Length: 363
View 1 (cartoon, helix red, strand yellow):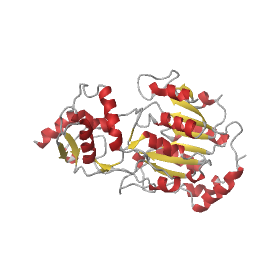
View 2 (tube, one colour):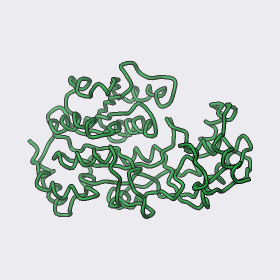
View 3 (cartoon, one colour):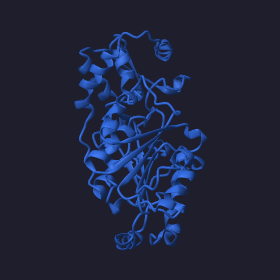
């Protein structure tokens, strides 16, 4: 049986950032050398993957890294129904996972996670890239306790920050969200956990192109770019491979346990800089038109980011986990644009109603 010290520091785990005190961490590291997972779970990792959206490609990259770089036997429990999904990335590339020895299990996770896992045995690591609230996470958290996992890794969201100051750090005030409720659940359940809060992901096999394609859509059609406020607001756009690398860094790393980490790049850019980089890769220049969003009642998604600066500091992940982002938006944009054109998105019929509303209101 694992020697459990987590209930002894329960009060500390309820601090705003859910981080351990130095004394609690030292106690865990001393004891962790004499504990073990349930027999059969050693070196096995379970990834619970959502059906798509902003984190849709993380499971693909994480599974490859865990299997190839960390030497783990990986099972992906994928939401979306009993039949494998096709016709979109990253689903169409899942053959690469199977070639790497990754087991794919498809299920409707809205009906529960316990049933599709009942014959899968124990796991040493759980990577939860699916739960959006405490109710959804609870069944897998209970299983993880039974398995005596070495770490329950939850992919949360930096969107919960209130954003009172920039860049945002892990101890900043957050809103009450479903992901925050999962973080609090993990802090009270007495199992080792790590939480990661990603922000604005793009990359290979991307499942959500909205962030960068917003700029491409207008530039390729010769349309001006409506940018809220001054355009000097800073944003953090992170390659999904870097995000997966940070998630996989918990394996064999007791420094990760009991901690929350922002998950992003340290190469921040302003909104106007994103405009310039996208124009360069498209080989076309269009006007940048700044506007005051307070003057308009725009539909949700009129601009892919917030009107104000909203970006995270990853200093904690760099200092504690040795995280070093390998990619930058500038170096990634050429191949990302090639994919955009290859998909015919530059020729797709589109409407820009919010843009028309902005420019009509400015004239």
